[in-house]
Structures are given as C-alpha cells and as structure tokens.
Length: 157
Image (tube, rainbow, N blue to C red):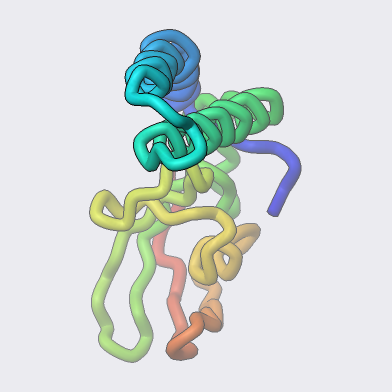
C-alpha cells in the first residue's frame, strides 16, 4: 500500500471529527467504565474491569490508526484529476467482458471505499488493475476467486 492516503476534503473532515470524538467523549466514556468497574472490588477477579481495560486498548489503537492515516493524508480535488488515465478518485465506466454488463466504479482510498456506492479501494484487485490504464484498454483482473476482463469505456472526474 502507498505511504500516502489520498482523500477528498469531505472524508478528511469526517476523519478529523471522528478523531476528535474518540479523544474527547470516547476517552471519557472509557474512563467512566473503568472507574465503575474499580468500584466493584478486587481487580484481580473483576471481569468488568478487564473488559473496560481491553476496550481502552482497542480505543487507543483506533486513535493511533486515525492519527497515522491523517498524517499521511493528501487531499485531492476533483478538478485536479487527470482523466486521460485511471487515477485515484477517477470515475471509470467499464464493461465486464464475460457478462457484457456495464459498471461504474470510483477509485478511492481504503477509508472511503464502499462497494454499495461503487467506490472501490485503490489497493483492491479491480483498483490495482485499472490504475494507470486508458480508455479502450482491456484489463485482466486477478481476484481471489476468479480472473476476468474489464474494458475501460470512459474515465471522468
């Protein structure tokens, strides 16, 4: 995976908001849970305390993960996208050569990926296969369960 994390302005704002919530209200809630569990007695045999401490560890790991993603974030604006080839944030219309179905994908970062909305991760088999290709090219996509071909019909921002 690339060291840079390409995002839209909207996703960057969502990530910053999520980080702020995790650092403030999220940490406060975990601290409250730990305090409640402490009040219940012996910490050696206190399952609630152990669960709260484990939740705290997961919470702090999520904060660290978000901070790392934000440090490597680069904002891309749709007007800056080179539509002569498939790149991050491109919208790509493809035809599946086996089924003849036409599909539209937007190549996005891992954080923005949502297959239901046609937003596919740049590091996914389809994302990797399409990246850097031009209109008219037929691309072999090697997925874990199959291999298939997509023809690039159109690229837009």
